[in-house]
Length: 145
Image (cartoon, rainbow, N blue to C red; front, side):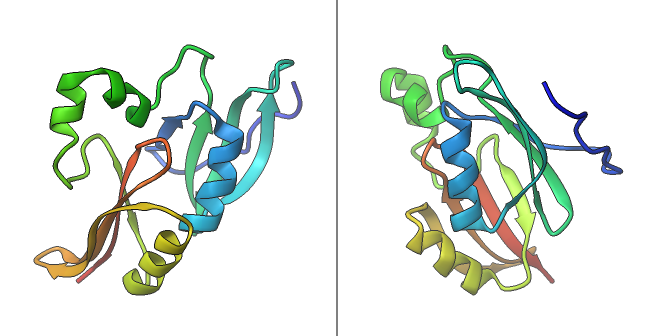
């Protein structure tokens, strides 16, 4: 399988499943500025079973856990309840990422085809925007006050 993944000092590390983790890794880099780090584990069928990405030293793990996995976008295409609760622009079961320049990050994500749930705006927590990746995972990018 390769070398052991790099240890991390973070106490909480998000783990996100994708129907096609290899495609997601490339897109997350282009759109959101994540960089791949460490070893990528690929199964004999080409499925990425573990990969590590980072954003300014903060890690996130991604994988395609099984061929039966359905992304949030795919699931809501066939599930009325999921479609209904996903109709709001809020980050539901998502990831919040702090960024230095919300507007520049927004422009990058939009240019890469992110589904924009809300444009950059100021609120009591800071300046933020919300977006969805191609598989329907929701992200909030924020510059706290």
